Length: 382
Length: 215
Figure 1 (cartoon, each protein chain N blue to C red):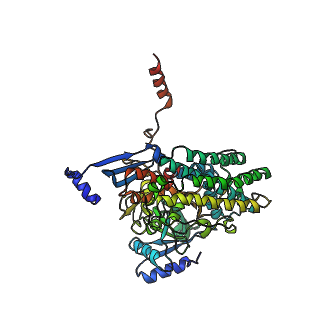
Figure 2 (figure 1 turned 60 degrees about the vertical axis):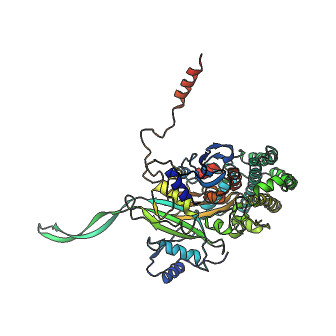
Figure 3 (figure 1 turned 90 degrees about the vertical axis):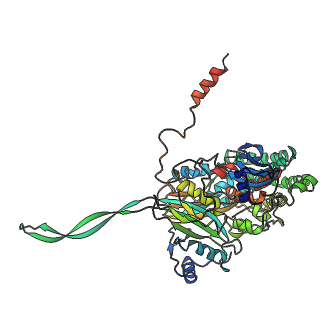
């Protein structure tokens, strides 16, 4: 039965066909990963309509950034996707570098890769932990993930002074240099992480319940994924080979040898495996970056941080953030603050096809499908 | 990454295959050199389909959609006019005098689309659509029927800038609540003075709660 027909029957009071139930899932619900609401219409257990409702955390991030200097927006970007402040910083500084034509020294590029891949690792570990938690694997996987995440956050703290709101990258380089001792600590950590991934993967990969709950659930076709602008691990789970680190390399990503994992079915299980496989590739990149990091400055002394006034024009910079394509679009009118500052939020755009993935499934699957999208409401609502 | 034709070539290609389509190249002065194409409303969707389906372009991925508010501007222009002025001997003579004249340039709202190709791995091609003014003619055609990824982002541009996208399947506010009147991202937006958006003062809440807590 079509939704339009159902609506007509409900309106006419002739819905004796079954129970049409409207459920408001969220905004305060543990499975929505933040203040996020879904208007769900159910026929029995089956979802016949689902409309995401968000904006509860909206603070007009873009307007705030348009009122400040170029430098002042960096700490605000930390608070978009608050699990991945390092990559948020990178997306923004990349756009400013494109807008003003600022060069970045090599050592800074290497440190950026190191912190970005550590960020990706902890994001994916956390996401898998939360996803398994949503399916009822209470505690253990999430705690395993957070145990490793904690070590990475400790490293971020000793580098930048903050665990989550790092505010570390600057256009033209970095805020502070890392020490040799810090690099040794990262090397030590990275050497131990493959063992963690093995353990983490073996924990539930072949678990029967996990397979039953995720395989064939929330299937996203290749064509729809492309048309709906889905990016990141979600897109690659639908077997589209598109990773910005490969197709539009920024920084020094062109120098590293790594593969882009692809899924076959585009279901929740593929999205789960995609994160595990990407964690392994991140470790490969980390090993190469830690081996190749050169000595040198982290910032060109001629770069103006304060009082930057780029020529009138515009630029779009994009990076492969853990959640997808994170882009920043800036228009300069020649003054000290951006005329237009726009964030392309990957997790909001990945929500476009939430309804398509959930139609015909039951409510318990909605929770799992939403969990596999990987949203952070700080970024969805901005 | 395969090579993408320059914006001038793209303009020529579009105009050759879609007669009547008016495409203007908007140059970009920054080092990024990401130039863009301004489209007319009538042919916007046809151009979008052309760019999406052309076998060499295949711009199947619309990454970013956004609005921009360009305010009404006043330009002053110095022009020379001939005027009769009093000459040194008292008689009137004709003389060229400089006068400044103020010209009002009407502002507009702009919707910007960044296109990439997942198949050919190239991009960006940037499209722009402009409204006639900022007040009563704020319509542009929606490109959601071409790229589904525009759905939420066009809703956001509608919500925060007031650009009305004709042909959008579900044009509602997305970040602000239903019933909110203004468009907060516009450059001349002024928050309401009556503090209706402000949260309740914390001190009064605290007083109330401590009063209740006392026996």
